[in-house]
Image (cartoon, rainbow, N blue to C red):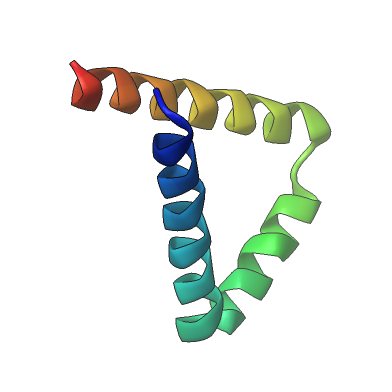
Length: 63
């Protein structure tokens, strides 16, 4: 993995997040309210599952 790959990945995340905020700002607000209502352990588990899914996808696509 090169610095260019890392930069490309960060740029893609920013583009996708920017599109979500630009196209559906009310959805983002509802999602944040739902997250706020979740217990911390549930949020932590959701984050770990998201990281694991991302790593798995990265491993599959890079293989």
